[in-house]
Length: 93
Image (cartoon, rainbow, N blue to C red; front, side):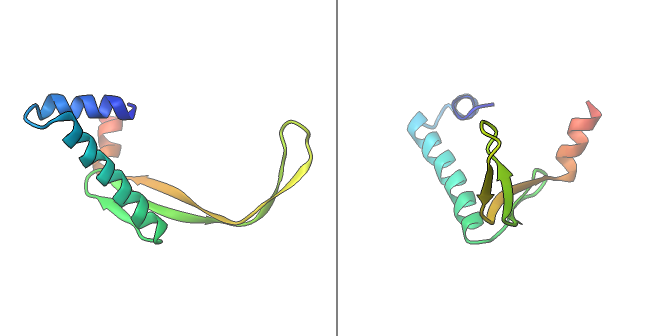
């Protein structure tokens, strides 16, 4: 599902809200998750899963076009762990 499909589904389920209001709510939702992760925090949505970050160490990578060695700096990357309920829904049907 892409963002526009999400907005469309939310609008179908909430016809009393204007499209702009739904878009604003979705923007706030994702912005808050991103902000919390940027601060080094964790976001847990019960029954869905948890967003967090993980540290990646610096390493030597390869440029796929030339094969040349490239230094890849250490960084934090987003990580999602699915909750128990969502895993059960995926595996039960």
